[in-house]
Image 1 (cartoon, rainbow, N blue to C red):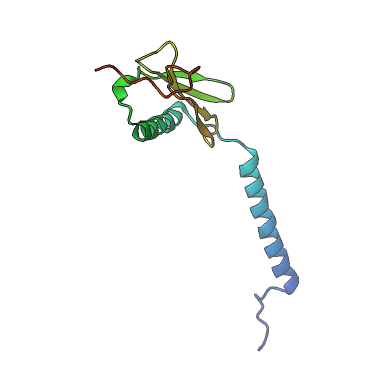
Image 2: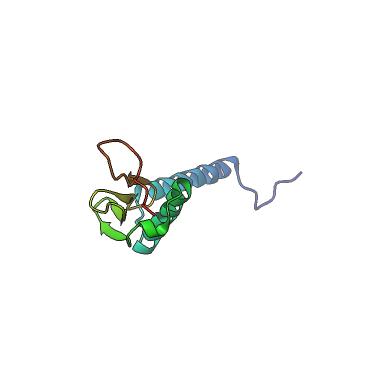
Length: 124
């Protein structure tokens, strides 16, 4: 078979492959180095999902919590719902990192933290 005038030499193919690999690595490193920051709406959405997850797991009603309080810190967002049976002692606090990659419960409602018991039930 006669070589085509558009055929690439082995060296040219090798350069293209290595160039593609280098470009892919540069893009991957660039995406990993630059931290993205989420906006308030996205952080609030994540916190609301964690609130729903907590309520489903614990059986708590939404009426047991005050309206959400939001704080912005240098390293993340803090969302807090005070627990109505004992708002001066207990609240549900959720912390979300600025990039949105980490989220955790910072505090769970417990009206008697020194006793180590779960949240005190409402008297009906």
